[in-house]
Image 1 (cartoon, rainbow, N blue to C red):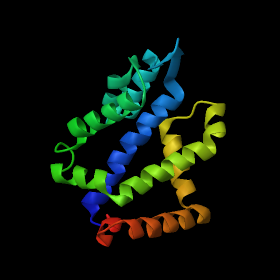
Image 2: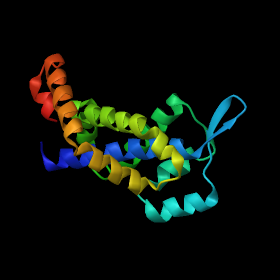
Image 3: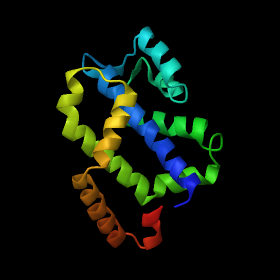
Image 4: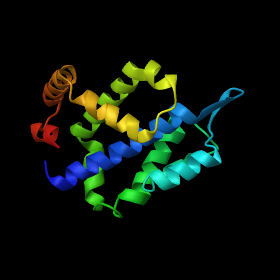
Amino acid sequence: MNAEFEVAINRVSEVVMFENWLRFYFIAEEGDKLFLRLPEQAMERLRAGYPSLYGLADRLNNTEIDHKTSLSAVCLFVASEIDGAALPESVIGRVLDSTRFHLELQLFSSWVQAHEEFLDESFMEFARWQAMYEEWKKTEEVQKLVKTLLENASLSVRNPSETTQ
């Protein structure tokens, strides 16, 4: 896998994870609807601590949130802030179609589900989520899971070279 592709995978994955983190800590139920509500102090901390991701928080703040709006916001953010701006346009499409990216999303989702109770005990900065997730991925159990998932993916992919991207 080339370095540019790996950077793109990491960058797009980070955006997805950040959006998930925002929803985890800043969701507000109002009637039968959910909204993302970030206090001004939180927005200031995000602007200072995560300048490359701040635009996503700004875009989502005070909006009604569901799966469709989350997905749309992430895609629009990637298209406007990463695709062609930080990385060549052709790379992002390959990332989104890659087995490697889908594996990363599957692992992150598994991590959140497995640690949801712990994550919910108290607020954690996004950087802490990232560090904990990276440490979790290094465990023997997760490495075995990755190997199994990649083997299963290679069986279902017509072009086996796609599993390496």
